[in-house]
Amino acid sequence: MSRDNPPSARLVYAGGPLRDISPWDGLLLVDKPSGMTSHDVVHRIRRTFKIKKVGHGGTLDPMATGLLLILTGRGTKLSGDCMGSDKIYTGTMTLGITTDSQDADGTPLETRPFESVSREAVEAAMKQLTGDIHQVPPMVSAIKKNGVPLYKLARKGETVEREPRLIHVYRFVIDRFSLPEIDFTVSCTKGTYVRTLAADLGEMVGCGAHLTALRRTASGQFSLEEAKPLNELLELSEVELQKHILPMPKAKLRLAMPG
Image (tube, rainbow, N blue to C red; front, side, top):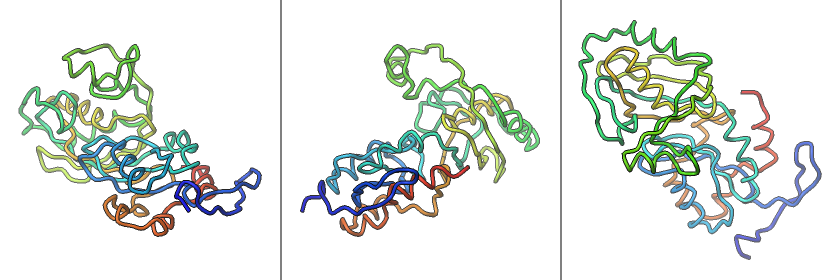
């Protein structure tokens, strides 16, 4: 029997009627490696296991690692719910250097002295970047201007005006202070650009900064501890992989839980 038409089980959706649900319909928690786009992960899983429908529930930049929600089969219908969840990240920013992408994948733009920056000054800036704030998205992003992704314009050397977006940062704190590096944890709403938080903080303390590491540790009710590294998942058989797919009814219940 093909993977596209596997045996199905009669399960009950929360608040819905009985339906036939395939073992491929649900949510897979993946620990994404650095150097891959979220689409790369989707493509590898789709190609390896020959699943017709595969998507993800919230993009991670290529440099970033950590929790990526992969949606399989009918689970792709949960995309909106997944993307709307709050997120938690740990990361590292480096003071004194700015880049065109606001992270280590970009081209350096400027170098400034950072030695006089105090922990107190960084903590004060983090406090100002906590709560409801309006954030200007970076030029190197997938946001579209007149139908064209901003990163394509950025590659041509163009800079266009971007509308500030209202986000909420619940928590932004220092985990390690060792200039020029600062390790941090941030908890925020969807649509937050953590590299922009780092860049904005750098400007606030007067020396500039860029993001050098980022790891997503939670998305809504799902945590990184539940995820498996991508390379391990790709080595599994069909039956073994299905054991790691959270069925749609359970996924819907988890997504409905308050953050």
